[in-house]
Length: 535
Image 1 (cartoon, helix red, strand yellow):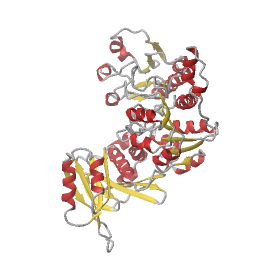
Image 2 (tube, one colour):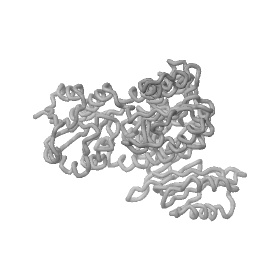
Image 3 (cartoon, rainbow, N blue to C red):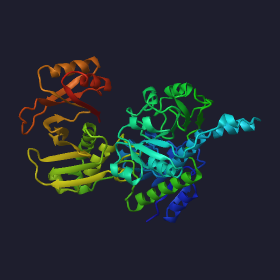
Image 4 (cartoon, one colour):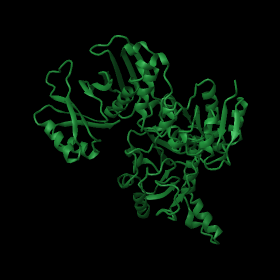
């Protein structure tokens, strides 16, 4: 049997190439291939290792032949059409931990550069000026660093900042409370606590519709005068127009930016601002990180082509053939229930996630279902990329306790999935099942109320005082927001509580319900809680 053949399309460093050759693979270097060579020859290879320049689009992958694995030497996989790869049975792997140290170090480097005016002083001195008093800075020792997003990079920043005698306070609702204690970091329950107390603020949140412009005029107004802010995470997390206003007013004393909403960029309103230090997305740019990314991605290719037990797959790993028919349709249900449970959680944060599987599915290996719940719960809430392979390690790094149980008996339905989110003393539980020949996901429990309603793409759950006219009020507010109600269902309680005048309604709609509409409902008489989630 011939050795697997791997194409290294870009220069990923010697260690990555050596890892492939040491495994006995036939390695070909395609650094200088001409246009069209990749499409013409891709079918010759079992695996391909790339960086960011090679674009593996759907059209290119049409020529993949029996290609089994794509390795991306780095974190992002924007240059790979992952859905097309998945359809063709191609495993896509990356190197998600390759740049965390580098990004953390760059954050600290920017903090020091801004606090001590190092780039400005350098430019002044080499231009022939000695302006010592002009560039007097501030010490880190004894100050407070606020970290928004306490994933792996945020935790590494905290470790390094501690060496400067800095007090660290961090906010991340998707990190268990014990993890903050273990790191010796004060736990902020809200971003506002950080705004009020921090002398320096660094943001390490994922980029989602909810976090876009997270640091805006309102946030800057709540910060201490002279605060220094940093972004080495994602462009767009800071409203740059608002930052400019805060810098000009003196509210913000300085800023360090490594990322921007659109890249590459060479003209920007903040470039040249005397209080701003900028770098061209260098957070992951070190020789060590580049070499580490190539080696880690190569090691994953080796695993994929030998044992199949990869640890950083971007696309969902295959389920054992004997369980696929039963478990496969339940994975999307589990992801939706995980996402919904977090959205309905009335505590602050996520300390514990419990999954329960009842009925026929309990007789199978339910680990893929537990991972599906975890992916749904964490997706969009962590800076790290979350998928079926990475989810458990991301949860462990954040100190989130995970548990799973099975019971082959289920009441009312053949199979039931229950998901519980625990934070402090608060527990939020949802449950669901699959219904009909097409196995559509249905919600059967939320906030202690029972339903049988389809889990559509856009769902809103409302708790309100049970009185006439509430459905009409909901319809009016959503209609004014341009949202069409597809279905609505009022829940029931298995055991009615005497004197309880509340009700819970689930509304599905043709598009996401705007936050402003939910706020309008909550601001009106009788509404106690409202949550909206899109899948």
